[in-house]
Image (cartoon, rainbow, N blue to C red):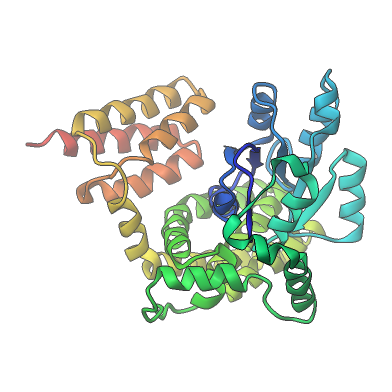
Length: 372
């Protein structure tokens, strides 16, 4: 990678927080202005306020998926909305899906997990040359437009196209020995996330998601929401693969295929075991969750209580947008160890819209924070 694009504005759309972070992390070296949206609805709102040069759109999202979001964006009354490049992000790069992308108005697609070389080549393909700034340091090497082609050929031959980025990532770890985590291949995780620093952070993010994802899977199964179940395991398949948990990823993939074929019998039989396996990773990843928490902003007990109250009040009004907004702000703060377990409970209760449990958990956390 021997260029930057500091004048380019990019919107990344994905309902999965980890996917957003990884995609933004891969684009970070290009110095672009990056915004993120966690839903199709939010993406439409943001695209009408900012004229992005490029939009990366996740395919499978609950509610309004990437295809529907693209169709609605293309119908807006301005030439910009008909021409802005929209790139699908998908773990299902099959021919029939690609045809669906084209019909919706998407210009291209990237397969998940995203290889760094692929996203860089995509930016070069869809951003006007006037926005591309070739690094002076590497200007001589820019004659090697063949670098990208060689990397592409290496990838096609079964090699790794992200070697340059991965080398930098391993350097982040100062050549320290990578941790040996059961069920997780560290080298694969670094390859997919771009650096050891990002991989370790995403291990903590995955830890944070486990309780809420378990609740969603259990609720989907109990209520017979097979489409929602399929969307959840699809996202988890990709997330597990990105952190290097190949076995867990394959299990989610199997359940995704069962969801698409409406094989409710297999889903019902295997999901309890899958959930046990997912919960098993919580203990493995706990140190990374705690590490992430230590790196968050320290605020006063009063500020934490204020934000917890905002969560409680939004849930009481059943204003789900405000609930998400308040939780996102709360997630930016360091939670004291005395409330760490309750924060996990709160995340799961909010995800499952268990109003009474949210109220009780906020009350317990507030009582602890008020103690001298």
